[in-house]
Length: 258
Image (cartoon, rainbow, N blue to C red; front, side, top):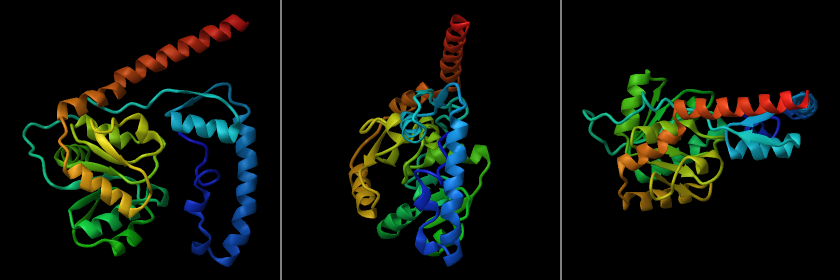
């Protein structure tokens, strides 16, 4: 999915100096250097890179100095769909691993201020810290069965994507259920969300920026059918067709060189 995050672009999100002990600050940098050297040498042996987004392709070019073709990953748009028997709610939703670079802390700060209900699906090492920060309007659901997740997507007022995503498959799953997405305006979200039609972007990783986008969002109306139609561009069928065409092309190029 991406060059190793904690070795490259997300190093300080995982290893911020204020969170490390004295010995960790001494040990981690040389270990990461050796990991980067190994990673670069491994990348040099790859024939063709396929990235899951333009965002990741740019990262491959930056760190490995190699071009990458892009094939967006599939969402199960047959399973994730609008549910006619489930009414919409006023709740907002996050579906995410609870790790630093996902910036769940930013969403918690924002919803602590607004008082609106925020449901958080997922687990991870930041769970304890995030629970301490959250007010009662923010509910942690842990892992949920697929059917429950589909219902949560459908009923949500919007899915919140507070961090920069490689691609952001949850944004597509939510849209497949007819639900708009409010996302940080960088990374893979730019490739799956149509601003004003299937969601909105906020420009800065701050609670005030997300809060301003929430204020704007409340005044807008979205068409669930339009949102669903956008998600279908990332169906499993579309993915299989693109992957098959790519493999056929590369195989033909290989045979032509023999």
